[in-house]
Amino acid sequence: MEQVGQRINKITVNVDKNYDDVRIILYRTNTKLGELTDEDLNLPSFTESGVSINAYKEYCKDFVIDFIDKGGIPGFYYEPKAEGMSMKYTPSEFKSGIKGYAENILADRYEFSFPMTEEVNIIEQYKDKYIKDATGVFDCLLMQYDIKFKIFGEIKSGQLCRPKTIEYNGDRMAFNITNINRIIKQSQ
Image (cartoon, rainbow, N blue to C red):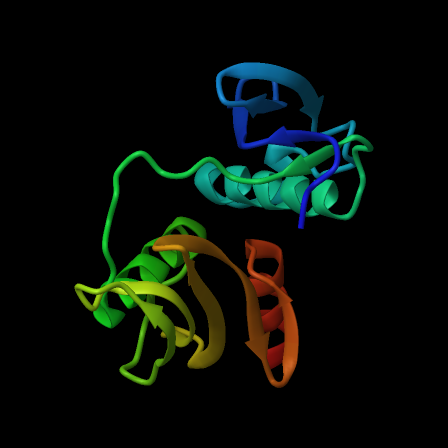
């Protein structure tokens, strides 16, 4: 499907801790297309969030991607830039990649593990048997709370996609620190 409008393929989040100032910059390749603040998007400030700087940056980036995808910035759409390093994935490398994304969100606050219970559905493979297209469901266990939730992952055209969705007790939600904290509060 052809996207209409201007493509945004890179989003950076800069946080100045001294002034509690947040700048979210939108790019197409190396051209700056615009800049937003936490106030523009009605987001909590970094100090109000109570999370690590990495988790906060991931949250802001996820929020802006979702905002753009839902038409929040007319005339623009988000399509990430292909990663510079080419990597080929086996099912175990797929799991490791998803675990790496989970570390960006969880590692500063929670101890977690990935039990050996993943479901990987390989849709298409390259001739050398590496994954071209696949979906996967990976169990993630927050060890100090004994809470298990599912992370949904995907490989498209050989590229590992950032996991966007989790499921807990049958409810699907965005994969971000706010929803992880909500799950913990619900379980107590």
